[in-house]
Every structure is written in structure tokens, then in C-alpha cells.
Amino acid sequence: MNYYNIVIIGSILEPLSYQSTNNINLFSVVDVELRGKLVQGIVIEQIDKPKYICLDIQNITKEYFTPVMIECANFIKNYYFSSLGEAIALFYPHVDMPLVETNHQYIAINLSDAQQKVINFVLKNRQSLIFGDTGSGKTEIYIKLIKQNIKNGKSAIMLLPEISLTPQMSKRLKIVFGDEVAIWHSKITKKKKKEILQKIASKQIKLIAGARSALFLPFNNLGLIIVDEEHDDSYKASSKPRINAKDIAIYYAKILDAKLVLGSATPLCSTYHKIPTIRLKGTYFNSQKEYIYENSNNNLSPFIIEQISLTLQQRQQIIIFVPTRANFKSISCLECAESIKCPYCSVSMSLHKGDSILKCHYCNFTTPIPLYCEKCKCENLTSQRIGTAEVAEQLQVIFHKNNIKRFDSDEIKNTKELRSRLNEFDNKKIDILVGTQMISKGHDYHNVGLSVIIGIDNILHIPDYRSNEKALSTLVQVAGRTGRANRGKILIQSNNINFFKSYIDDYESFIKDELIFRDNLYPPFSKLCRVLFAHNNANKAQEQMNQFLLNLQQFNNIEIIGYGESAINKIANKYRYNILLRSHQVKALLNAINQSKTSLAQIDMDPINFN
Ligand SMILES: [Zn+2]
Ligand SMILES: [Zn+2]
Image 1 (spheres, rainbow, N blue to C red):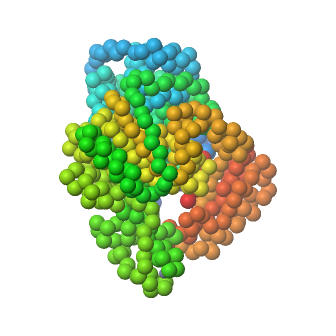
Image 2 (image 1 turned 120 degrees about the vertical axis):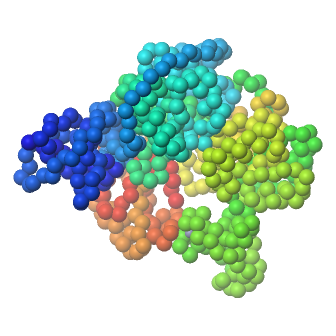
Image 3 (image 1 turned 90 degrees about the vertical axis):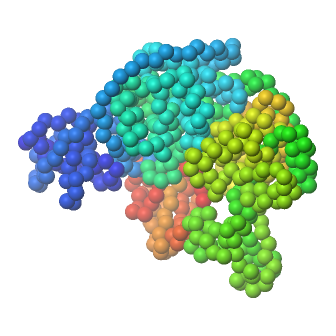
């Protein structure tokens, strides 16, 4: 009889011991019984006969995992404080798979000298960051690199934010790579997933372009990992394991001995600091941009309306960026200044006029719009921070002959709606598109004569060490999406004009200044970790935080930046406390957290959300 330690895939349990008369290879997937149910596990170790009685391994289904996958999963377990079972589950798309085959001819593309220079740089370096303006032709460079990689007999992964996986992008890749490319994201069907896995196994597919989870597919000869739009927050998972797929890609490429290429028009300061960088300027479309500033915030001013009117007269389209959805972010009482809060969360409820409701954007609780203040009973209610719905409605009243549509998560619920709205806009059936961050991602608008940015100061004022970076990067991304073919105007409404003016055309100098500002305090010069404690009972959450703080006292080389109630101290009836930690030594930090852990502690390494 043989004995094995088995990790249950997706489980938080420690490895469990099972027995089998068969000789089973390491990392094989097996079926085992757990609490009366058949579950899938992976064999991670052969062990001596334990003192207790073991259950039999039921089926040995297949060999799927490579040692490198397990090494990467172990890294995720240790760095992001998940279980090994949860980390391994990332690599396992849970569909069965056998085998197939074909071949494909490539179409040649010509690159500019500047693009060729980038290729040479990438070929010389194991890791590179392509700091390329929107419209500078990064995609052609990726395609060339992938072709070369395939020619060398290796496969490639190209990660993109889910929203950037547009039909244009996949069409473009299909033209070049035909059957050798597949698109992978969370919404593809089980059947399609199975087909893709079969074709990866039979080496028919040599390129996967996909969202975060594509990184964990079972390529056995990966030569190249590309992470496009590397600045995008969607690479960071908001639930356990709280990985950042961009950072995992850097690590994974290293242990696989594969080439790593990151790309962005607005790279993160920390990436720029860490990774060898090549600058590619946006001369590709030869566009001209004119920036106009208005010293104001959060309103659809007469000046903005005048500029929209002028643009419509010239038969050009308009995009409007507003970082808030609904009609207004909140409503409050003019007498007692109290804002109307969600009963389950410590946040203001947003005004949705269309549905005649107030809605909480954290727990989705809704309530009819009140007629008076609950606290002082006065009827003088006022609204704050204009949102996409209000901008669209106000504009529709003024420009009633024009077609005005929204582009936010209230209106766009799936990829089909996303595609059809973008198609309508591209076919000029929409004159004005009003959207949230969604509008700044992945799509290029070709007939846009004016981009309006309202409420960017709200991003600038988020209490987060990255708020300057987020605000400027959003602005540059919105501006970069427009006016490619012709002269485009960009109207920025802000009370911080000097900040935006000094950097809008020179993102690199922003990065350099920002790195000086962050020196020694914030990433990339230090590591941050946020530990969150959430519970229905506020005392329990607080006790656990205090216990964690007490446990931390014995450790050196870590700094407690702050602790106490979270910025949002209640969400969905759970009271929230947190600790923010900083260290210059990763190992010291990981060790201290590991030794101080309490049962409620949710550990978030390299956090991007400080609410
Ligand atoms: Zn009141
Ligand atoms: Zn709520």
C-alpha cells in the first residue's frame, strides 16, 4: 500500500492523507472522499504509513499540473496568505480534456523604426516595460514578438483587462494567428473552455489572449508572457486569494525562464521603477490634441454645454467621463447637513431618478426617495456629486434632437451590451456617450471631436497614496482614446488645473516626481499590507484587531502605519476594522503576519483598496 498527502482543490484545508495500491505520480489529479462526498485533489507528496487509518484514493483521473505550476501556487499561498488548495484552484479550470491538430500561415506586418527599436530592446532583456503612448502601435509589437516566439516552438500568453478583450482585438489576432489563438475570459462557455484546453494540450493553440485567469492555463512550453495595460487595477483580485496577476506574471515568467513584456501608456510608478523600460512615443497616428481647462468641479457648466454644442455643429462625436454613476452620489439635508445613509453600510446612498430610488452601491439596498430629512424632518434636501445618469438627462433636455447614451455598469451589464453600445457609437448612431472609468478602457473612438472630463478631482482626493497617479492616469487614458485621426479637443474641469497641466503631456516626468515623493514611504520603496477584520458584532471585530496588534509587538522591522475603524466602517451589516502595515523587508513582514494571524484576519498584500 502507498500513502499520499493530497491537497483538495479549492479547499482551505491542510493536505490530507489517503492510501492507494497504485503507484501514483506526483501532481496527479485524483478523486477522494471527504465528509462523504467525492472531491478532486492533487497528490503533492508520498509519505510513510500514518498512525491513523486512511481512506482509499478512488480514481486517478489525469496528470495535469506541472512542477512549475505547483511552485507558483506555493508562492501565491505564502505571499497572499491563501491555502494551497485555493492557490492550486487558480490553475484548474475544472473541465475534462483529451486531444486534436493543424497548422497556420502568418501574414507579414511592417514595423516603424521606433517599433523595431522596441523589439530589439525586448529581445535583449528578460523583462521589459513598453512605455508606449496610446496609438503608438504596441499591439503590432506584441504580434511580432508572439510570432517570433511561436517560430521558436514556444507558446505565449497575452493578458489584457477583461474590458479590453474587444471584438476588434480578437479579430485582429485571429487574422494573424488563425486557429493558433484563443480568447479566454470568465464569460466563455464550459464547452468552449474544454475545447481550448484540448487544443492547448495538443499544442494546436499557441497563443491565449485573455483576462486574469488565462495566466493559469496549462501550457507546457511557455516562452512569452505579455501583460498589456499593466497599470489596470483589474489585475488585482478583490477576493481570496487576493493576487495581483501582473505580479504573478512577473514571478511566473522568472521561474519558467520565459520572457516578460509589460505594456502601458501610463505605467505604474512601481513598475517603471522595477522593470527595464523602453519609451515609445505616439507618433503613429500623428494626432493633434488641444487641452482646454475649466476651473470648477462636478458640474455641467455653461462652458461645457457651449463646447458640446460647437462640436455637434461640426458633426463630431463627444465622450464625457464622469467617475460617478447614478444621478447623484448622495443627497443630504440643507438644515442639519446629514446625508442619507444606507442602514446596512456606513456610506451615502446614491440617487437613481429613473427608478425613483436611493441605492447603496456597496450592498445594493434600495429605498424610495425620501421627501424630508429623517433627522430634523425638514424638506430642504439637496444632492451632491453629479453622476453619469444626471449628465445624460440634463444634456438630453438641451440637445433633445441628439442621441445621448450612457456607458456605465448600470447600463452595461454584460459583454454583449458592451459590444453593441460601442458598435452603435462607432457607427455614429450615438452623438454623446457619457461614461465612468469604463469609457477610458480598451476602446478607441475615431470620430470624437471633444472629450469632456468632469469630476476628476474626486479621484484626486481619494485618501490613497496612489490618488495622484490614478487621477492623472485616468485623464491620460481618456485623452488617449480620442482624436486619433483628426484634431481633438479635451476639456478638463478641475480645481487642480496646475497639477494636470504640468503632467498631461509628459507622464514620464510625473512618474519621476512621484517616485521622489514616495521615496522610502510607499511602494515601490516599501511593502504595504492591509489586514481587515469584519464581523456582525463590532466588538468581536475590534477584539480580533487588538489581538493581532498585540501579537505583532514581538516583531521588528515592521511599522504599523495605522489601525482602527476602516474608512467605511460598516458594509452589509458587518463592522470593519483594519490595520495598515509597512515594511522594507518582505520576509520580515510575511513572517510577522503569519505568526500574528487571528481567525477573522483578511490579509491583503499590496492593497489597492483602502476603504
Ligand atoms: Zn435634516
Ligand atoms: Zn448598503
